[in-house]
Amino acid sequence: MEAQYTSISVSFDSKQELDALKKEIGAKTYDKALQYLLKSRKKGVPSTAGCDPDLPAFTGIPEAIPIVYLIDTWTWIEYWKGSNKKAIKIIDGSPEEFCVSSITIAEIAQIYQQRDKSLIPVRTDDVAGRATIVPVTFDIARLAGQLRNTEIEGGIADAIILATARITSSKIVTGDQHFRDLPDVLYLGK
Image (tube, rainbow, N blue to C red; front, side):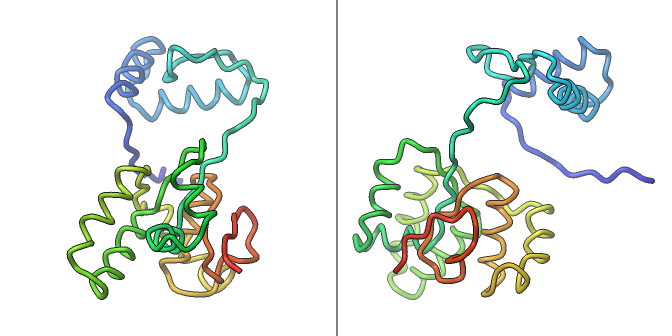
């Protein structure tokens, strides 16, 4: 069976770590270095390769995983309107990391194209300055197509947001009715 490939983005520091690992294990490709890391983790082999050197080595003992919120378009709009206290609390005061799907940027631009065009750069820059933007990758797009009308009603944008949350193991923060009864959703609506 022919291997399938996708691309990922890594920081310059991570690339340097992968280069060092490739040299250390004699791997010719980044794929082989990443496979080595993944197999080592599955076996519980202590390792700091590719990790922040200030963090302890992986020991095979699971630790608490922080919640990462994926902030939906609904939440941003309610935040800017000042109409949902929970949205304000999460965006302004949450200790948790949060991200947004790049489709959220498109939805915000579309909304403000109709309301007030001058706010498009203000709102989208606000989001980009506060959150990690997760691009719509091949895997996210494929999963979104599978989820639409099977696990989530509504448009493809909602399916992309759900797929992004699933792939990034994030909890969606929204008040959009389409997400109301889904697992791993922090529902802010009524």
